[in-house]
Length: 91
Image (cartoon, rainbow, N blue to C red; front, side, top):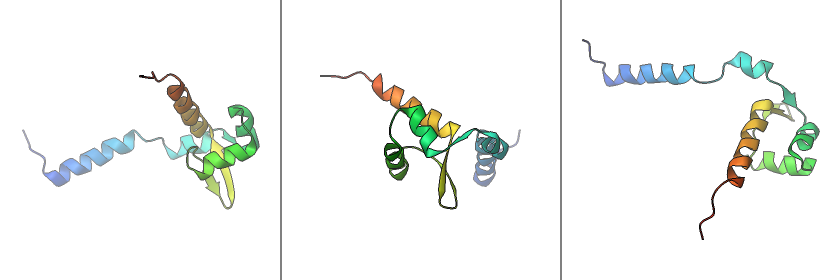
């Protein structure tokens, strides 16, 4: 049986963590939305979506000056919102 050094263990952990990240091809093929479309899906105004983007509460891709919202960003945001709605309040 062979023992790994700290450096080797770190390298193995980096490789394992990189396997769990979405691949570049999944980001490319992911459905993308304009701010107007995202506003319709979320049910808020376009200025509300811009506020979420500016405060980093909603993720996006940047292409020049244009901000594009990926389906994964919307899913993550909507999941957070649902989670916050279901939190128990302790009085």
